[in-house]
Structures are given as structure tokens and as C-alpha cells.
Image (cartoon, rainbow, N blue to C red):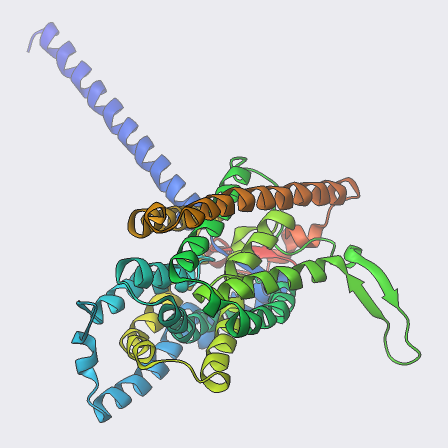
Length: 446
């Protein structure tokens, strides 16, 4: 082999080595990006992190993710299969309504239940638009079905969240539920039946699209400041009433805001079967600057509570749930108890911006589909104009809330911040946790 051939071989070898190095670098960058966005780790409180990651913890704690999925799945399926076989109800799957077999709804809820468990969008955010826009089902039937199926799916997802001890904001669950139940009852009794079907469809998608856009606009700052819980809760007390007996009564503007937000969300839930979850999510992320990692599981637990209240009120108080809703409910039960808990487990590992992207995507698709299918310009000029007004007004309101949240956050930071709400801990707090387990989590104080 002469000198020129030797030089050529060496050059080709170097080129191959450079190409391999470039490919490995690109692959490593892709793995790093995936890990940073889709496998960030679960967020626990400080005390719960030590409990769930203790190498000497009981087996059901060490295998908490599997147990959190299997328990509601097995319990529900045992009951469902027993009833289905006893009364031979399998024919319900192929019965057609408006020319569409009911099992199409089962397929829809494969995606709907996963989104419900993984994001702040309840199962109704998929079920209601699909049933009313694509399947031509009455909004009242779709709304009742949403209450019913979420009482199973969201409850299963809530069990997974609570069993895994993922961080949630309990004050939002409490105060939003107080307002939410009142809003649901008021809407079911006095509002929902006065709203024509096209209006309920368009208003539902319009208001939540405006929120999604506001959240997107806020998150254009990728490294914006967020908290793991509502910061400086005690600073919200503006009035204390002394009593001659017992503890004094404190009025907290943050609690009142959550009650009001829950009440508005309850009204939307009374119309479409979902709304209080995204209302809570909006208040936590825009006003209190709580991370989507906390706001998402909080909204799931909140929706589980309030959807059960809506189901109970419609069936036991009003007694107006029709057979169609029950049949759709039957064909979707075995699906949602799998999808929703799986969504909760996977969603608990996602980066907060990925969780927010789910909100952008679903709300945008819903709005586009509503305009294509409903065609509000062919129904009523009032419907078209008011839908646009809802989008614009909602965007303005959510922007005002976001700006107020910025002012509140700046005041907190100027006064020294809130280390507990930020989830800041000392290094020695992790000494009792194995390195393999520690890599799976984000730890927050409680």
C-alpha cells in the first residue's frame, strides 16, 4: 500500500470516527432532552419523599405505582364483569345512536381517560365535545355521562395520586370544592336547561381556549418563577373576628378567591360536566404561580370530588339521568379505570411545560372542531358574536389574573420569598434516600 492510499484510509477512519462522535452526541442530547421533559420525576412533600422512597418501606409503598393502578382496576372490573355477565349486557356495545355504535365512545374514552388523569383537563373535555359535536348527542346527555364516567375514572386517578403521595395543594381542593358544589347545584337547577345546545357547545370551548392562550403567553418565559404550593398563605388574612369562645375566625382573600373560582368552575361543570378542574388550574397557575406539576394532580382530585357531587345531585335529587347516559356509562367503565390511573402515573413524571402543552393542544383542537362542526354563523349571528366575545373577554380576564399574580409574586420575593412553597431543602435532607430513588423525584417541603 503506497503513501497516498495510507493517507486516504486514515482520513476515512477519522471521518468515520467524527461521524460516530457526532451521532453519539446527538443521541445523548436527545436522551437528555427527553429526560428533562418527559421523565422529570414525581413531586413529593419532604416528609412523604422519605416515606415512599425508604428502602425498608413495605412492599406496597415500594411498588406504589403498580398498586395505585391495579387496585381501582381490579375492584372495578370485578364488579363490572359480574354485572355484565349476570344481565348479559354486552349487546349494549353495538347498539347504535344516530347511526353510531356505542363502542365508538369506548374508543374515545381510551384517549379521554388518559388525558383526564395526566392533565388538568377532565374526561369531559374530550367526551362532551365528541358527543355533542361529532356524535350529535344532546348536551344534557353528554353532561350527565361526563359526570357519571368521571366519577369512576377521575376517582380512580385520584386514588393513584393519593396513594403515590404526589404533591397536591389541599387548600385549593377544599375551598374550590365549597364553591364548586354550590355552582354545580345552581347551574343544574336554574341555568343549564335554559341554554340552547349550540350555545353550550361554543361557550364551553371558547372560554377554555382563552385560558389556554393566556397560559401559553405566560409560559413563553420558560424559566419563570413557580411555587410547589400557594406561597405565603397566612399573608392573605385581611380580617380576623374575635369570638368569646373558641378560636378567632380569619378571612383570607386567597381562600375567598379559590371559593369564587370554584363557584364559577362549578357553573361550567353544570353545563358541560367539566370546568371546576380547569378553573382551579387557572387560579393556581396564573394567580398564585403554582407549578403545573402541583396544579395538575390537584385538579384531578378536585374534579373527582365535584363530579361525584354532580352525579349524585342529578340522579338522587333531580332523578333526571336518562337511559342513554347509563348505557354510554356502562360501555366506558372498563376503559377509564385503566386509562385515568395510567395517565396520573405518567403525568406525574412530565415536566410542567409538557403538562401545559396538553392544555394548549386539547383546547385549541376543541375550538377548531367546534367552529367546523357547529358552524355558528349558520345558526345565529348572536352565537357567533358572543363566542368571539367569550374568547376575547376570557383572554382579558385571564391576562388580568396573570398580571395580578405577577404583582403578588414580586411582593413575596421582595419580602424574602417562601422557601417552603418553592420546595427548597438542604442537601442533608436526602441522605436517607438511595441515589437511584432520589433521581426519580423532586422533593418539596411540607
